[in-house]
Image (tube, rainbow over all chains, first blue to last red; front, side):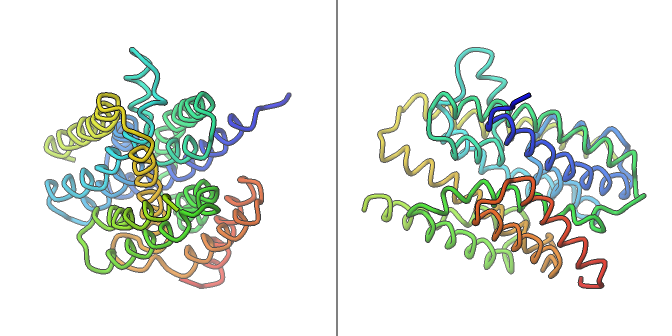
Length: 215
Length: 105
């Protein structure tokens, strides 16, 4: 049986997301959240890092409103994602569903594909894969509980590794310098900015990206 | 697990959907020119770069530890050398887990 490259990428992304989901579900369970909460939140929000941030801050004893504010702030990047893939969302009810599928990995895969129709398919298959994988992983993680802490298995390295692998095509273009600048700015921000804000600071490299795009 | 947390979780889902939909709707209305679309694509990639860097090197409270950082660095090298995605991911987790087993934080 042959699987086309796009579906293969989407399956691999789903597999990676499942393992990150296990880590997320295990973390939630170990902090005393009921088994259904992490999968349900994951299905409804479908943004991975926001759910982890929300539950992580709550578990750390943060004020719930503060945890919500940080998670909503980190998710404001979906405004830019929605803009970037607006023409790849189709029409009618399918568009409403695809909007929910817009997240880090699905957008990264869609932007890595040149052809418009293929790009839309990339967003759809990657997004549906994540919709299945993220809550399933969270459920499994919650049921496994603290049998094997996710850190022991190195699962916390998977999320950044997936995003990075998907960024490689863009890193081979003139956007390399702005992208590296965005990473650096976000990291500097992480030393002082409140939770939720640092990843967004990468946007400050946009003028640099636009200057390089015109040349 | 209080009703407040449940309510805030539901609100987070709604707010996130609104962000996505608003971005998509805005662009569909305005129909940006090629340069604006370029800016929007670049913005999405820059945000992904920010998400990647912070999740690779920090854990919300500070430095994520040498094990994870090395695992992601090895994955970066393999991805750059165009290794297949499964290999990249297995390497990231294996290197990180191996270093922790060896006592590296």
